[in-house]
Length: 545
Figure (cartoon, rainbow, N blue to C red):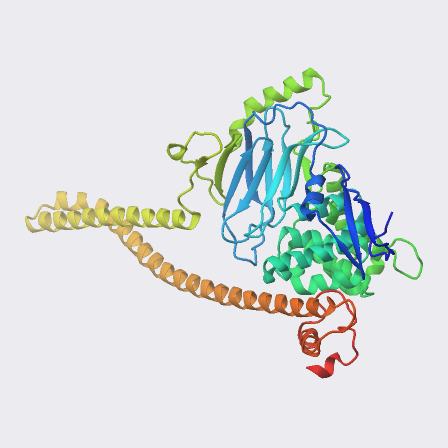
């Protein structure tokens, strides 16, 4: 067994290497040691990742043929600081459901799903970047029986998540550094871009105890702002590992005021950090009051996270809870009464689900208002599509315009009625008919009052609408400018991280002067973004700027 980052002398010639893969077969590779520290690897690294999801044991399950009913909503009501894709694509490939956003980021989601063979459960889905996807295996195998499980679509990220799941944190920490560089090789912006893979990289640094890597990761991804409560908890862990207990308590209290983390690792990390901060006092006893003004918030966080953790599925990496404690987590090994009872409950309650997804079909969902255009469905295997044509903003605008038209029609009708009553009153007064004139005064006054109130309301609403539209336009422009600056800042952090990574990639320490100079300048401007290195540790860094 070779520990992560352990140096092993390998003789020249063929070398047999067996890779330990969690929940999968362990592949064996025949490598060739050429000499001078070079090992020729003839196999693709994807083979190792594929073996992590290789299911050698299968359990007969009817979930592939049953219709999946689900509702999807945002995990948090807080505004998302990134451009958000409101449309999601759900593609069903047998037991696998692939979830992909549109052209922008998908906010963390809450997916409530059920089928005739899957008891109802609520599953958290982390933030997904535009070039990412997540998958849900409805029949994932584990020691406690098959049940739905979520993972990244990308094989390397899935392997990293598997190492975290089984507690191989040191291996996960080493792999996280390699995965961060591999992501940046595809697109340099992925050094700093928030994504599902980046969230796993952050948890790998935190759980492996890599304080330098975690601090650099928090700095280059701005996790506190872009990765929700998971990012805030990881930033608090980073502050605690560097000795800043006050900042750690402040960040953890801030996480307590947000929605819970989407990853089960975040629940455990938050509770352990809260108790560690509460026990960090002179008496050595657990006392949340010793934390200071954030003591009550940390106690509340520890209680709520512990309660949520006990209700969550223990074999799920994301927070997954049954909607009722009386319902089973899985129907495997359940009695026929339990299975029949749930099948009956599902038949009676499936009208509550707004979305249906059959095997080998594609379904589009809008987060604000799911649309179902049954007439546009194409029923053939592998490509059934349900189109969603309108978005919620356009729909709301149409509704407002309709109400405005209705209001103007009512106001116009009452105005005509008031003018008719006025003409009739004047006519009867001209022919000296006091009886008719007196009988018209009451409806005339009533109609006149209603007309004036309605016309005044329409004028006021029109003025308010103009002001609201102006404020909305200014707010939109401000958000666009802020997002443009954030995008430029993200690209700057990615470029700085790439320069620093290039400098530390020279293993022999003979770094070209230009590359070393650029790396030191980037550190002076943005700080350490990759977690240390001999070039970045040069005491003359500040003078280079």
